[in-house]
Image 1 (cartoon, rainbow, N blue to C red):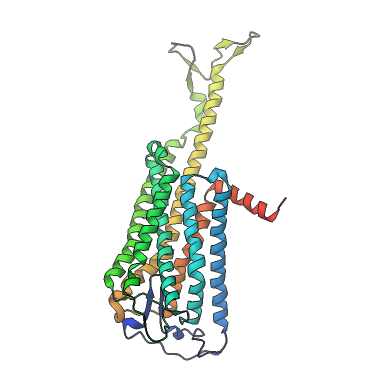
Image 2 (image 1 turned 180 degrees about the vertical axis):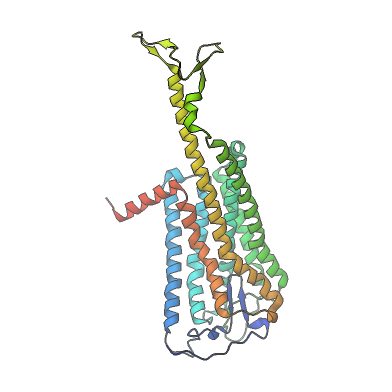
Length: 388
């Protein structure tokens, strides 16, 4: 394909900067070779086709993966717990992202021009801000639920009810809507044809409020919660890990079952504690050793699960930060420094879709790290592919 000679210049005013909460770009999208508007190029260029296919695949994968999570929780009675209701609610939120946000975002990114009118623009921006914020805040309530379950297991078990999960989910949506609504009150309809769909970035206070409330505060909360969960999990691993399993059986001394007896019998003792009906001696201390072995094996399994859980926490937090941090750094900096800051338009689109990608990663991490989810998921796939 012939390379186009296009000179890119920074926007001269904030009006030319197409900055939405989750849709960054300049009006000068035509600065990207092969990504100029349809008015200048009659057909779809090769790069537009590739970009459209990639974005369509991301949208479809996000839709299917989150849909399967919701179906798995709904179909599997074992997964009907408050903790899994929160995960299913996260999946529903990410499903809304794939339905309400990504298809239009694909069209807008590829064409570089808004052709859907003011009403659709307002609806899309509101859906974009609300759903992406709710997705992030769901990660916080899931982390909070896990933190309480680990640090206050006995008391929180009584409080961990479906009603409490519903209240937490409702608070997430209320706060998300409170962030998405303000731009609708100061947006002015333009008489001319709308070619750019963007949130007005002249309100710096709103930019600070939205970015801090939707990302920076939740991120600090996630780091603090997962840090405490990691420390607690590590302490449990150290407590549960046996230090000398190979020598334990030869050194163990067991207290006999005789009422009021304070004597201690060695594991190698052959003193019968009682006799069977046939007169053959039964050695209770040997039975105790088998029970002790079973408890030891159970502790090993629990320690292995704790190790896996700590690794999962690192993956969850790492994926979240990698996906959203670049976008929210630009989201906060660009409206403040304006003409002093400029990035290539492709960078804005890349960071924008990197944030969207978190809605695809969430169901993969949260379900694949849970054995109950994996088993239920495999059963659901088998049921769909191999009907009776």
